[in-house]
Length: 387
Ligand SMILES: Cc1ncc(COP(=O)(O)O)c(C=O)c1O
Image 1 (cartoon, rainbow, N blue to C red):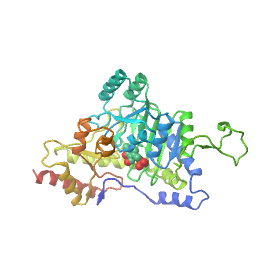
Image 2 (cartoon, rainbow, N blue to C red):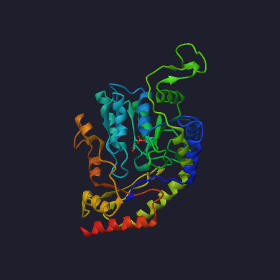
Image 3 (cartoon, protein in one colour):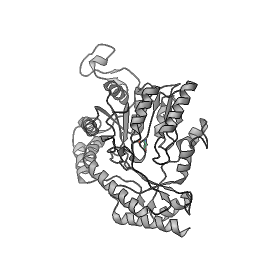
Image 4 (cartoon, protein in one colour):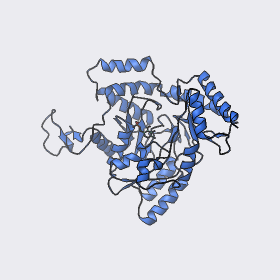
């Protein structure tokens, strides 16, 4: 099966991990700090806090922003469940903003209209989580303006988007939001096996996220409630978690970061080729964000309503031919857990229609031209054969 996404590991990655395995530190040691430093430098931001997943980073970011019971977080239905679940972990409520039919990111007009209505009904969100879907940056400038107008905080879910750019700056620069989250799951643009990171330009928020990452424990004298008793001493000053990244993961992360430019270049070549060779088919091809440069984590096509086959048939036929297509995403509000909270069909029609017609074609740096030819040929055959 040609996978829709796959890690790209070479000898330099293996050597980096091996060096840690032969060193004194396996879990959080010097490599974690180095990885944090390198990612924040790469993105042009101030602080980075590495964690064991993006899910953990989203959770801790919400807590650091003070999200709790009675509060509200808004995100999009077209995302992985973690973008919404982070609010539920904090006891807060979730609502969604429909997506733009062209970019499949949060629709700015829908956000503005919903905020206006929420102000009138007295139930504004405390946190909004825009998702840079497939690695295409959202309209961060517009979101920042609305955040000032309506007083909400912004967490960018950039799980798909390390290496992407918005208005000439890297996603993660922190210019338009409070916190930016990356995921380093193996299908993502760079990997640490499992792993995530929260970036922020706010030193206090960074400190709070560091504390919550490590059980709520501090070793800093100036943070202690009691008297500092020496180097061996620590205090638990809040209830935190064990969300630490290991040095093994961080070493892989540093090595992958060095290869990020090459990964994105290869992804862009694949995108150009898909674009040129699929243009005549009854499908909507993905577009690059207006103010940005995509990271191209995913390549999602969307079947036209007049396409001769439905998405299910196309999915099955492609898989039967060894092509690991996938669906990103079945709308989060229609998951049984969220239905139980009161959401249903018709709530977010654009995301629902898109969710029935979308299909992710394979894209990853190791995909060969021959494999891509097979994907394109099979897609053409299925879309014409059944016509
Ligand atoms: C948009 C989005 N947010 C959050 C996550 C969670 O990432 P992780 O698997 O690192 O917890 C993912 C992972 O698939 C994702 O795609």
